[in-house]
Image 1 (cartoon, rainbow, N blue to C red):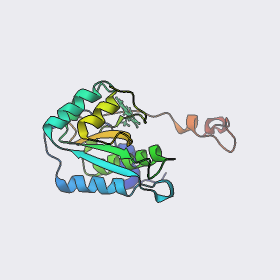
Image 2: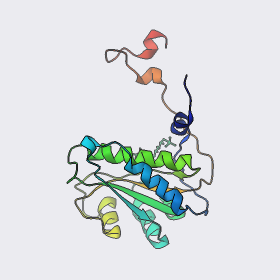
Image 3: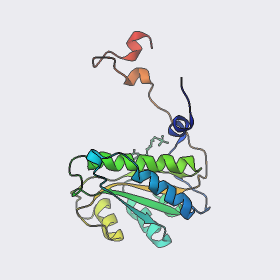
Length: 187
Ligand SMILES: Cc1cc2nc3c(=O)[nH]c(=O)nc-3n(C[C@H](O)[C@H](O)[C@H](O)COP(=O)(O)O)c2cc1C
């Protein structure tokens, strides 16, 4: 099977929820944001907006809010920077969630390629209920109500080596017609 730097990065990236106190440099952050900008999007609509949160008090507040949706909330205060990934429905009303996800994944991979780690807290679509984590997060950071939140990505130096697993391709890949799995052909 082929292997190269990109394929290794895709396989090697892990979600990490604890970070060391080592800083993320402006250059590293710029490279990560740049990777987000080069994601594909529906008819190249580029509906992304990336909000960078470095301020310690705001990161603490992020953690408090996201505590409601993830057990990894402490990572938001611990990571030196978090990126809120949003998509503007005015630019792409149709595929904005996928556009946002593609940008977020590009940024996670870019961070990994620099020896940094990320964690993906998924945020739900509009409309948000009053008092939900999504609406509180928008209020805390001044995000317009109509903006679609996609993810919050804390970025930092990993404090441990994370592991994970995946379903095998033989369970996932169908050949020619649905239900004819690779595994049925002895793959
Ligand atoms: C859309 C999305 C939402 C996620 N939301 C959460 C979350 O709320 N809580 C959580 O613990 N992990 C969340 N994660 C991270 C997953 O738990 C993680 O990606 C998965 O366990 C696979 O591990 P890996 O990222 O290290 O490969 C989310 C990931 C994605 C893509």
